[in-house]
Length: 534
Image (cartoon, rainbow, N blue to C red; front, side, top):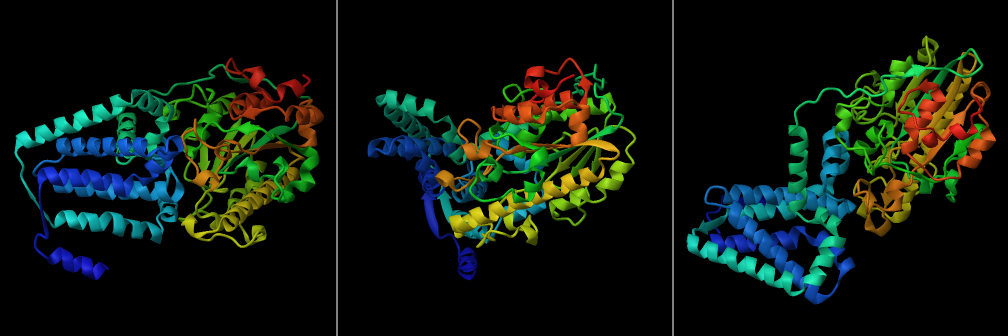
């Protein structure tokens, strides 16, 4: 195929078309080749022939008008080819993973690295690019475009606008209902989805650097416990773990078997909601003093968070990284990246030398371990042989090539590995119990879709995201000495764990449990407050 393509490119102009017809055909090909996922979702609202036909014509003519405005003598071919290549890339992700293309998706892209990009761009992507990108681009290169009169172009735009108005106003109630009820469909409509998202990101990045907004400047450490030990918190920042596949939540497979020995001191919160469906949103939101409704992505770059308050109050704060970064949360605390291979390491590397590190702390300490966890699509590369339990597994990054069974198997293995990692973390904390009161908090940033309703991975718009992307695992392990010195009633905590919770609880619960006093603290959001006898 490549040989034939090169031979074709060496030929002189193969096709001739005037600019008006070229724009009409280009708009038509955009609808046919790249907007299939949009129409697939649109049929869920109304699968009537008249409705879909009218929608098709309206979008065709809208893209035609856009081409008439953008494409001119010297910009036509470069822009046409540029949009074809971008359309193909967007369509690949929408078609393969049922992913939405929005501002949050681009924020994730800005936070990713070479390894994650390599996982996503598999051979299937290059076939998509060849068939839907390079071949149409080659046809455009070999097309001789003849000029049309300005009068013809203006007349064509007027006629197109009139037809659009006639169709939309002729059935106004259906059009109005569709536009109001399906706003998230715009994230599947190429090229407007990525153009709008890029404009939003450009506006965000173009904002002038803002001064650091300090919070909790009144924070002080006011311990109310009776013991003399220092306190060591280990906060495991989980990645892409969904609660539906945790046996502690009721999943039929024993994916949390490694934690069985610690159940006496472990509390699992069965109904916990994430702040977002992507790392770029959820991680900053977890540590923010704002709740989900008031948190604005992007503000974490210039606003202090929970870690700053803990450090100001006297805690030693350490962030250990095994993912794509701390999303600006750890900008002002000590950061360690124990993985030096250039690719991701297994999460156990976060525990390397942790005991020796903790032995040298001279104050209370709060250590964050940021997992690789269950991040896709390369699930099979992120757990040890010990966790290779469920088979057969999907080793492909092109999920459509895998059976649903193998996809669930490989994902469950990542959850089993996380359980083993948490068990090893608890073991290390137990060995430090002679010097520290120890506690471990684990919460995932967001969940994951494994093919439910045709959706894969995560980052769906929050309002329409499936439960699998928002229901997350959340658990704590509390040593006996910690519970005793803090007067914590574990039975009370287990009863309270049956209530609904969310990532909004983290900020206030950590402040309350760590003995940090500040005016930002809200006792009703502290999950430990009702079970703590001061």
